[in-house]
Structure formats: C-alpha cells, structure tokens
Length: 256
Image 1 (cartoon, helix red, strand yellow):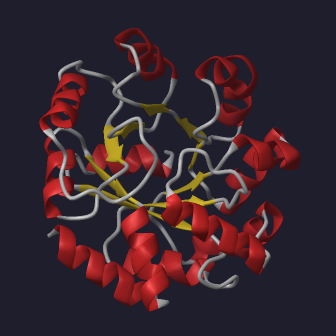
Image 2 (image 1 turned 60 degrees about the vertical axis):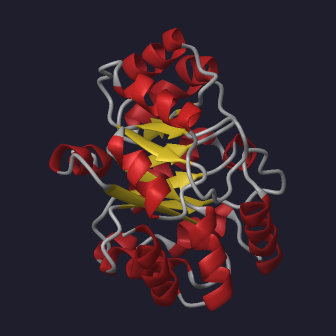
C-alpha cells in the first residue's frame, strides 16, 4: 500500500505535514532534515523542488527556492540525494514542485524515479486538473505516485467533487487564495470554508495548508480536516537556526 494511504488509514486526526525546500540552508542537508523531522514525530514530509518562479509561494519560500538554486540544487541532484532514503526513513514523502522542472526532466522519468527512491506523492500547484486527467494520471498511477490536487475557497463544489472522485491519497485544502505565508489566526470566513468542505462527506481525507504557524491556526485546521501542512514557519525557523532539530522543536512548541 502507498505510504500516504497507509498514514491516513491509520491516523485520522492531528496529522502534521512539514514542508521544506531541498537545497537550503545547505546543499547537502536534505537527508538530514528528513531524518530529523521523522525522529521528531512528523507524520508526512513535503520536499520542495526549487524553481525560479514559484507563483503560489510567498516571500519566505520564494527566497528559500532562490537560495537552493544558488546552492546548486537540481531535480537530478535531489533524486541522487534521496536514492537510499528508504533505508532509514519510513514515513510518507511527497514532492512539492512546479510543472516546468518536472517536464524538463520528463514526466514519466520523474514518476519512475519517484517510485525507485520511495517518493509517495507529488503536489504540482500549476498542474490543471484537466491536464492531469488527460495526460498525466495514467503515468502516475503506473508508478504508484499519488498526484495531490489543491482546492481553494474559490474552487467550485463541482470541481471539488471531480477532484475527489479522480484522485487518491489526500486533498490539499488551501486556506485562502493568497500565497503561502504564516498567519496569526483564521477568520470566520476561512473557518466557514473549512466546515463547508468537511460537510461534503468527501472520499479523500484533507490536509489544510497555507498560513499555519501557531496553535490557533493548527487547531482550526485540525478541527475540520485530518491535519495541517506547515511550510513558511518551518522554513523561517530552519533559516534562522540552521539546525533542523532546533527548528522543528521550536515549531512544535508553537503549535502544541
């Protein structure tokens, strides 16, 4: 069974997914960050593929991607760093990246290498759902790679149900139509959106992302989904401490 599916089968609530950008703060630190996050109880890790134009991301992750590219990170190097990751790490791993570098690598080669090194899913913010259905779904399923689609408060109920019917793993529920970045709390409008999606009785579990940085936002996300995704806050702490253990411990102290 795919590790993402297994996670959601075994754990129904308070799932913590952490995003970081591969290649920063150091080029060679990717594996150490992953191992450290697992040791500190993180349930799922999203490994960012740096890209020069990350349109869904705020300043923090944009800067991390820029630094990673300056450090020399590439998709080819990332795969080479992760080739033995499954000898030591057992939790689900997903890539988060944009279509351009994946297409340059070759989508089938990409999915094949994901399968080989143990990447369970891929989040591609700029992949249109129609294109996923028409061109990419069959290839991803061939290599047991879950393509995780995003929904926002502007996504129609019809599209949400189409995504739910035609994807597997989990649905990435974006808290707002804005870019990534830490927020102090979620207003009533956002929480009403969470409740609305929760009330649709979808087949797939959901994780809430964008803006989660403290106990209030983490609890609000977990109240109406299986858990939360934290990116910008962890990336900031990692940049400041340059120590993944210190960064995740500080983050855990903020959300619990």
